[in-house]
Length: 107
Image (cartoon, rainbow, N blue to C red; front, side):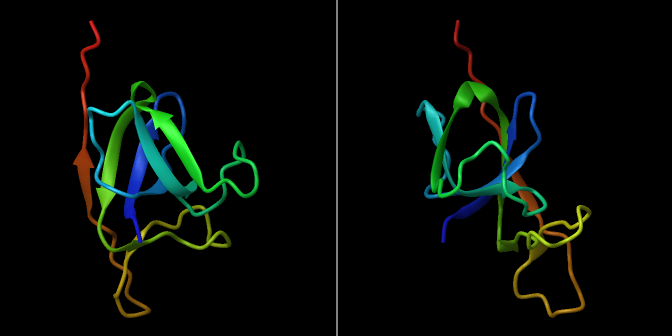
């Protein structure tokens, strides 16, 4: 299992994906797997069968790294939020996030 993350792209809605390793600001791209919208629905601009996407760092505003989260199923209502894994059914606690931001000066 990868590291669950929410990636905020410039001019687009944030997306959910999994990272193989923690982000490295010295790389040119961020590698994401298992992409979806934050509500668990598929991304309309990806073809069926896409397993891995590379996003250039200059297109990313910031990245939220999540711990022990499950993204809502695609049949869940749009208001569904990620919840902590291991919480008894019936009680859903909002998942905590860690914000990891990289600021680059490309002058």
